[in-house]
Amino acid sequence: MKTNGKTKLMLGTATALILSTLSASAENLRFWTTEEQPERLARQEQMAADFAAASGHTVEVIPVTESDLGTRATAAFAAGDLPDVIYHPLQYALPWAEAGILDTDAATDVVDSLGEGTFAPGALSMAATADGVASVPVDGWTQMIVYRADKFAEAGLEPPTSYANVLAAIEALHNPPEMYGFVAATKVDENFMSQVLEHVFLANGVSPVGSDGIQPLDEAKTIEVLDFYKAIAEASPPGELFWQQSRTLYFSGNAAMIIWSPFILDELAGLRDSAPPTINDDPTSRDLAAATGIVTNFSGPSNPDGAAWADIRYFGITSDASTDAAMEFVEFSMNEGYGQTLAIAPEGKFPVRRGTADNPTQFADLWATLDVGVDRKAPLGDLYAQEMIDEIVGGLDVAQRWGVADGQLATASKIINSQVINRAVREYIDGAQDAAATVAALNEAIAGVE
Image (cartoon, rainbow, N blue to C red; front, side):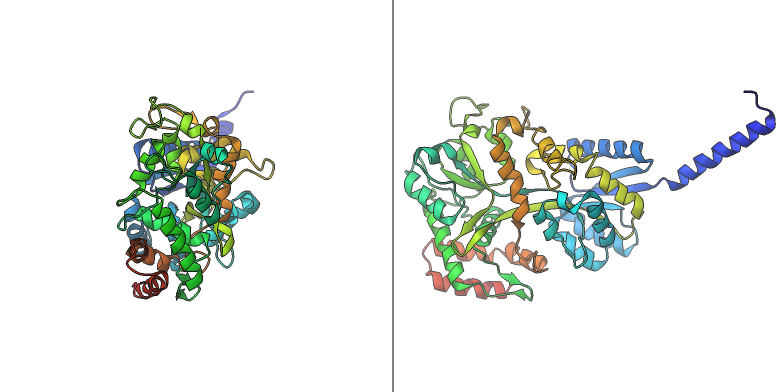
């Protein structure tokens, strides 16, 4: 077709208008992430590039050290210069929503669009507001009782899903120094002990906070917790114990049970030279992984439903965001880009979104195929049986933390960080005072936390 000068001018003007419209609708988003290691940043930048190609919106991925995140967000909010999206830990979700840093309507709309039923209930409930959610759950991990499933089977023992089952296993398997029944956390100034103790208290339905803030511990339930913890400590080696000793003894075949994070899963299978299993002469052996079982949700006598302790991470859409584009980015990251999101560190990033309405297990299935490991790589699904994969992921359905349901996470965090609970429990283990006196000392110490 021939065109005259006037036609060419009209076509050129139309093209310019289209390009101008597209340019005007494209946004330049800023995304803060605490996943700042080079390999993890590279994966996030690739996901941002994929999103830009699909949407036209560019995303600047900005690493922020997690310990600086709170102060940086507060300063940026005061200056009216928040990024569009922040990848953040659980402790900021509700406080930031109350402060006006987060756009909770936008987060709730994203969850509704993706399908509330496709998310792990526990991850949603931890960020729940009166009208929806403060932030969109992204990934998380649940603390685990790691145990020698082969030894349990040989002794006819039930998995350690309750205080009673743990104690029965100690009775049957504790034979030091060849086999310690447990390796409990006893080093008072280690956060590891705080984390383990919170899980053990939650398992029996005991919390130092309620809807009105700090509350006295229930004496009878707390004594059950103390007696259980003393029993697992007495089935442990002597000394100041934390994550290092528990992993070393389990890897050498000298521990029947430990409590650990899922970051042990690749090491357990001989994929990390800096922390090899030493149960045999082959540091790359998968024998110990094959002999291992895990429990995420376990219960005490006063709380038959039990509890799982979880660390959840969220995408917060801020009050300064280019809202529509930010929502598109979060939806992409939780849908087409979710594989990239989880692949950053699959052993510590369980899929809080299991799948889609059409394929309810799509992302859980995908997660099991993602490579873990440092010096060698392999998918979790090749290392562990499907029932163990299901247990790992399923813990997020019932995940809990002190203070979340009552809106008192900040208060609970102060209590945990003060380590007053660690100290009192250690004194009870060491026989410095009886159980009733320990509960009284705990209540006094907790009440004094500022």
